[in-house]
Length: 259
Ligand SMILES: NC(=O)c1ccc[n+]([C@@H]2O[C@H](COP(=O)([O-])OP(=O)(O)OC[C@H]3O[C@@H](n4cnc5c(N)ncnc54)[C@H](O)[C@@H]3O)[C@@H](O)[C@H]2O)c1
Image (cartoon, rainbow, N blue to C red; front, side):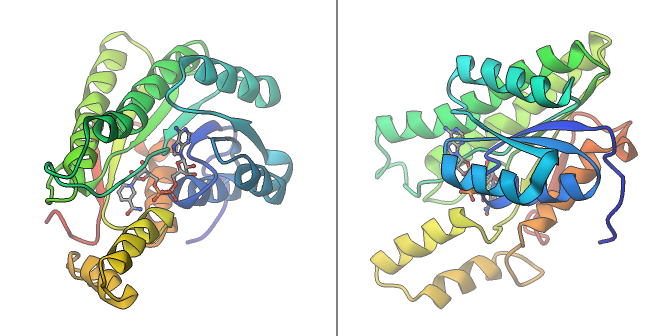
């Protein structure tokens, strides 16, 4: 994709920005002229990426389950770059377990990071953006928040929640007269650390790495896994003024999985 100034003058806070889709989004945002704060619990990885991206990036330690961390991260980002225009809620975990395997503790942990973390990111985002020139909040849902499978009891519950939370935030901001849009992308399987976690689980259960990856690929009509820059490109669009009349939407980036 050609790179340019599609996000010139945008200032973003990206949770989960140290790895995978969040890191790819940070790279694409900076290439399009934005300045980005990377919020993550992985400090070394996040700091290394911020160094690589240079003056346009800063790392802030952010545990998305902590409301105080969100306040501090917004403050640090605005201190460095000025008023925020964009929040991307990409932090998330996926621990495979069926309803019989999942513990209440595990279920609550997934909901705390994926759903409550996104709730807190939207809350902090609305508060910050309405004090400035408005902007765009982009949440990471999942194709597995629309359809499910046996090992996704907690994950699908969390991502289905993210999808509808997105719509509520979008409607509220529209009705309140804030110039804030809120949208959600629904990735299929994207080859990141998260998918590598499933590969490791599969290997533990005796499957070959290639077999697990082929299983993921077969779930998409395009016949392959997604690459991290593919959801990141969709996030660039939703963060840019090119999507100025789009709010409350789910955008599948799923190789046709939901078709
Ligand atoms: N990879 C996929 O196939 C896929 C598919 C659909 C949706 N998603 C969603 O996309 C988002 C990004 O996933 P990814 O594939 O890039 O995974 P990833 O594991 O590469 O990155 C997730 C990041 O979130 C961070 N994180 C975890 N808990 C956190 C916390 N409490 N506070 C702050 N940061 C925390 C991790 O440290 C990591 O850097 C997630 O919300 C995920 O559910 C991924």
